[in-house]
Image (cartoon, rainbow, N blue to C red; front, side, top):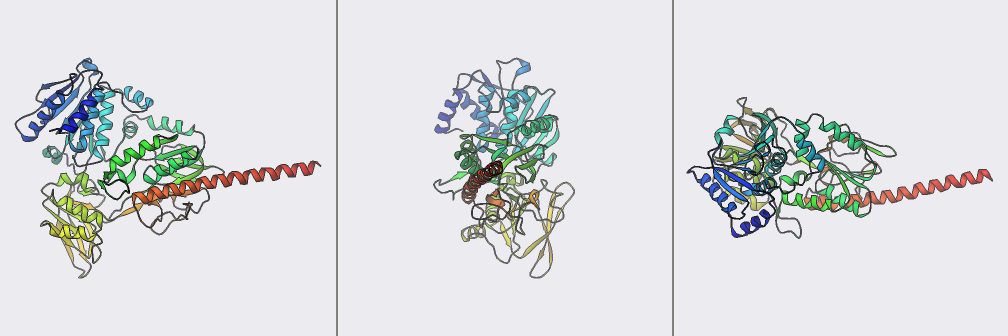
Length: 536
């Protein structure tokens, strides 16, 4: 299972164990179960503090990680139903370390809050091993389970437990259940989870945020543009804060990145982790899991958050990024997460052997079709225009595959379903005006991005597409308010361009503050001279 390099790395990590760890494996004669048994045996051989027992569990194959040295009431309960390799290997390593007493990298107040939770919390998270968002969610629940023995967590590989997936009608990952009931779909952090199960958590957070002193630069958004802006502001010695719903933005859902200059190839989650680590190197106050609600101008700008908190700053830098554009057709919202999806890498494995459609013929759409074609039975690509906009090399690859059909001049008009899940779509042939129906199990929407700027309507000038209009220094129509990244009217939406625009806007804010300080000083001197003249 593990190659020599992984074994060496894991052995080094396991040297951080402070107490014994027990692996309880449930396996049978199936291929995946044998793989899990081999993996568990290899882990045991790397540390004297790790032991192995076999016991048929609720799901097979599965591996429960617990701490035998703890009392029965204090034992950790973290389970992997499936083989935690691929993106979930890091989740496995962290679960071993945290169960073995290695410190958990969470804020002390969060650890205290988790420890104080009473009641029984049994979380189940359905994932696909190709999903890059899933490990973040799995690790959040695993950390909580390692802190509080009343919290139990099971990661379930949906591809191995298809009957459960079908029974619960799961068509998007990560999908989380709490005590047998739906709890969340998509990215959630520890703070998100606590806000849902600890009813007073959000109000306590708002109180703490309200007590903060005004910032000199307040960055709204934690993607590449926001991270770059915060670093540049902090390097100038400015009191800097970041307010972000989730650190990383769209980059966290990006699989392969091969155009980030000086880095030949990387992946979205890895780049996001590096971005966050770099920001932490500076004195930047990161306030994540917070969503901006409104912005008010004055001597100090006031940013109101959905939690009710109000944060003040001398300048504000908007870097809220963009999100997937929706089709805006009947049935799309009704079947979102029930066959309508926006991340082929995350949700693709749930449609193994089925027929799906990809909406959009740009690079993202054709890349999605190529990836899905290796998993599903058949892919139908629907492009509104008469020609595809994807790079020629991608078009050639897609056309060479035997299970991809490409239809141009196709305007999707309806998503159809049986009330529980998608069963097809209707489209109009724009050349003939004829209506057609395609029977499908899933629809992947890849038609570009829409800026996250609705909350700024009437506050700053935007384009008809909702992009914030900025000048060469990143300043918006309001002096002291700057913007950067995909939320702006930048010509191209690329990670490296977003980072550059974040730096530009941050330097623009610095220049604005310097000039404001000079103007304030001049005004003060004039006032003093006027008083002296009157006194004479």
